Image 1 (cartoon, each protein chain N blue to C red):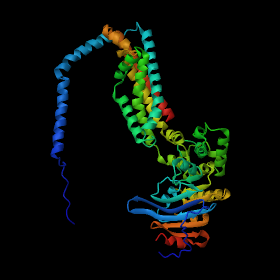
Image 2: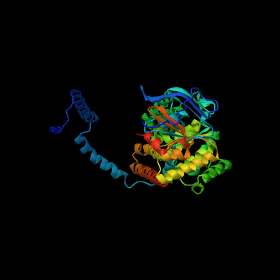
Image 3: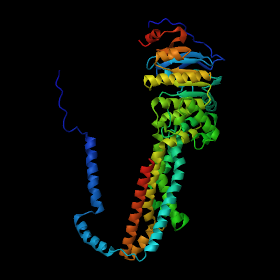
Image 4: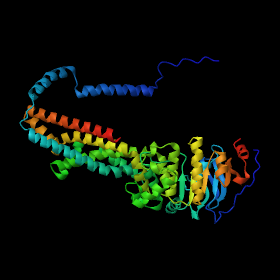
Length: 262
Length: 261
């Protein structure tokens, strides 16, 4: 029997791979240089951060009631935006799933639209809708709806594509209509994943809704902006804590629901 | 091959009275390597036919070509007088008259046995009312329960399909096919994924129900005793052709075993 040579510890790298690796390393170094991250800057920033935290504590409860009302409005924006987004996501997901869509061109168009919704940040959508419908929570709800569609339609479509093909084939074989196949076989199978995505969408929208006020799209963001601009850091601390508690509560609640349902 | 063929019946023309009439059917997945070619056969109404053959002989492919779950390359298929290879609207109409029982049951695991049986009503165009048992009218729910009763599973109507045993799942699939009111039932190795005892029980039940309702049945099987016991006629595929077509009463298991050598 001929002796088999021991494989080399390091695999050979082609000149192209080597050149690309060098380019990536150079780009990473350039990224740090351009962003101006430097140890001396960080060391100067730490005492300033300490002073800010010192001014934030103890948090002020002077305007607690209006802050809590704003917080409620923020959560309501998140709920409304998520639900509208989920409603639109379902038909879009069906059209974006290659095995359910009526035509590959429809898949391409819908996936492109959904990708556009996803890649443009919610803050940019908020600015767009503030211009379109004016200042206030309506713009925020629309921004959150679009952001939810970008997220949920994609994951709904993937969940539908991943369902077992057997039950679909059984309904196809008996002459069921496309709608029957989707609603009797595909959606029931994809439901756990879709519920999961919906809960994540709500969590994401709750986090997103907090900052939409910064551009005038309603919610607690405007309260935070005003507090920071007026140097009411103790007031800002109250708002930040309130936001933290809201996001935490929504995450906990959605985890509980997820565990109960799935 | 050391088999004396009792009869080989390959009609040249599609028979008008046949429940299923196949003529010149060819299918290949790889160009130049047909799974089968120029298959011609008639299935008489009310008969139970076993389709046998070694792995890769094309039994399941042939069976799936009948409701056009697999697209044949060439040939003609008429089911109950309708052209299966015609426009999609006509195809859907034909499919509603064909029940299909799959080897892997193909139930929606998260749904109840009753809902899976209710799905059979989709063949009769009940739309949204046949998506879930909770949406279905009382008459459909009662009929689905009756179908489950006929396969001995009425008591498990509310059970999720993924909590049933293999044999129970296959019974639910049979109940779903009954719910469809088909004139023809095709079954692709209905007992293959079950243990021998459950397989025998399911085949006995399946054949008995089909005989009661005088359905035309074609089932594929590797189990030669099932083929001889439950079918009126045995058709064997080999080398892409029909190598045996005979009434089961004239066959012995040892003869069929030789087809697998």
